Image (cartoon, rainbow, N blue to C red; front, side, top):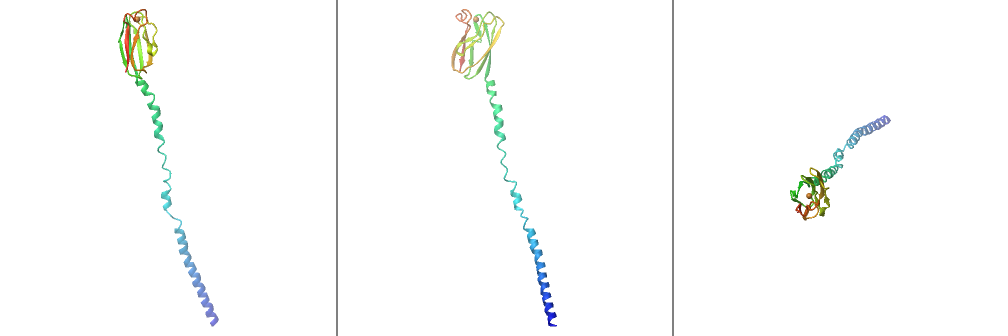
Length: 163
Ligand SMILES: [Cu+2]
């Protein structure tokens, strides 16, 4: 009788121990399953790459701006030459302007000469035209004239003013 009761007691102890171990495992596995789910890191990830914006803006400006001012500053004149005067006989520009002069001989043989800017047309017969172009880079008042014969002495001169 005593032996069997001891065996029963041992058996009950084993059952209790095994039962306790079995009951303990689900909690631990449940805890382990909950641990690897930290949702904080997901929201942090997309932030480190927001530095792409500054590049496009500086590229656009260069091509558009530089060529246009020189075209706008070109000033066109049409000057007629006859015995013995120019029309108009006063040309007024601003320093740095690109000057384009279309010279026309309306009667007789004439040319258009502006020594200080190395400007000189061919001697043009009646009805011929020639266009010369230069930059008025020096301020001052200059005389342009016709170099044919004694036309300059006869008063075929004009005034070129750079302000
Ligand atoms: Cu002349």
